[in-house]
Length: 139
Image (cartoon, rainbow, N blue to C red; front, side, top):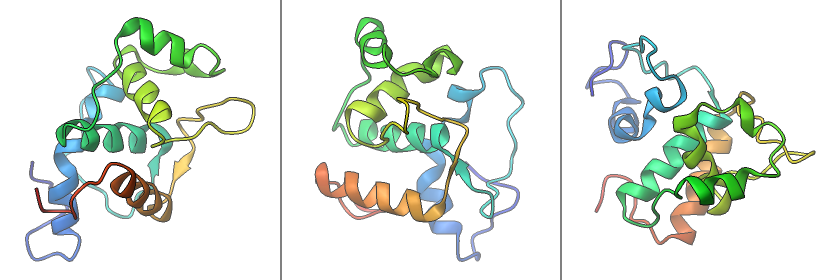
């Protein structure tokens, strides 16, 4: 995937290229007109980060998405789970059960809350270690 705001000579280009297939933007906004921009200065939210981290684990054959019954069971006590788009529910359930995201105070996913670059780096380092993932760019 190419982004209109990131070019091969840019310092962020390798990260954007590596992350692009895992963004799965339509999971959180089915039918939306998706931007052609990567927006490297924009902070992800917790739901976007959860989708990306789960997608990385799936592509490395470390996990599979839970089925509908498993998803409902995992999200049963998550107070704001009903706010999630249907396509995002299994991703968020997988993120929670596999430790890519933790619930916030009050058993909330808080999917729209910011997930800073530092949060993402920390979360990725943790799943990389926990699931024995190769360094970025290697398989």
